[in-house]
Length: 63
Image (cartoon, rainbow, N blue to C red; front, side, top):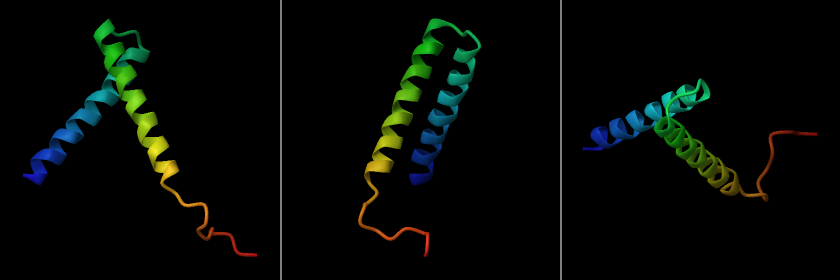
């Protein structure tokens, strides 16, 4: 069951990326809509990923 869910997510991600490239080349209106949604979800994921980091942790640089 987990393989089916992950496969479905993978298909959605790849399809969204294809729509982004197609929209950049001047695709139809629905492709531009899917591309906009894909980019918005990507920004949300990026924001959630960066806000999940703790500022009190150690960094990689050692002096």
